[in-house]
Amino acid sequence: MAHTFQPPSTTPADVSTPQGLRNHIRTVFADWPRLAHELLHVADERLRDPSLNFDAELQNEVAARHALEIQSREQVQMIANQQLQLSQVPDITTKSKHPYQPRQTFKNPKPFKAETVSALTRKDEYCAWKQDLQFCWAIDSTALDTERKKLFHMVSLLKGKARQKQRKDIDDIIQDKSAYTTTELFFEKLDSFHISVESEREAALQFDKLKMQGKQGFLAFYAQLEYLGNACYKSPQGMVLAMKQKVTEELRLMFLRDGNPCANDDLDGWKRKFQVWYQNCREYEYYNGAPTKVIYPRPFVASTSTQPTPNDSTKLDTFRTQNRKQQRQRELRLGLCHYCKKSGHSVWECEAKKQADTKRAARGYLPIFQGDGYNQAFGRGYF
Image 1 (cartoon, one colour):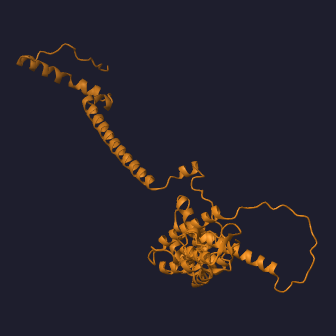
Image 2: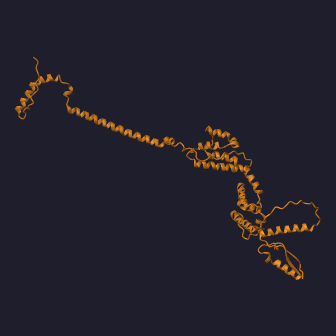
């Protein structure tokens, strides 16, 4: 008959006295065979100590948390490195959102063709084209931000003979084999072609031929004089000397009568003086000139050809009258006396005329006024 295991009594044993402890030990040893028989049928998990399992799980959890913290720190460091790299790389998304930002906004200058025959005019066209290019690069610095882009932009605006002369250099620039890696180096080569000695020689010839015309304003004449003088590298003293020789006759007379001249190299001072003299002449001519007359159409009269009579007094008087009127107008413009042809006084205050009138009056001659009041003819008086 099989032995059935009876669980031990739940009554606590009395181990407070030595005798009670001895009885408890005897009871345990008496029940040991039955305990051993039951332990054979109990799984290992039921025999483990719960406190030992808790410590192992706690250690595993601490190790897992430590590994998670290490992984989190590594991820934070990796994100910081990626952000630093992205800050150093141009933002592609910004360009895609604003496709018109890098485009050129300044209008391209006209292409330079170098087909003008005149060396001086060709030099002016080249200098203007060069300045326009520099303006364009300064304004569109976002679109043309590298020297290679500027070189491409420059050679694309060379046409005609200007491109033919630089064809090999342009091919080298396209293939990135050129020695001209910057725009300044390429400009230096273009300067050697289009700012030449021929333009200086042509400017010197035009400077020598320049002369102020009668109806030309002084400022217009001076602008042309200064432009040609700078083109042929004239000194200020040379330009002052040329200005004195090339102005009109009335301005030259003003210069000869000037009592307080400027220095020989004071170009601005002489310019101001000549401008004042020119303005005074124009004002005097305006206020004292002959009044304009209305010309009405006259009926056509057939002209009869007659042979001129030798020593015709009528034609001779007409010729003399016209000459006297022209001479009088010239004296009015220059402020000269009509009698002695000197400045500083009028004909009514002329001492030479007063002396001559006194002598004529002593001989019995009386003045008879004719013409417009200034032209005076004298004849014998009638008593």
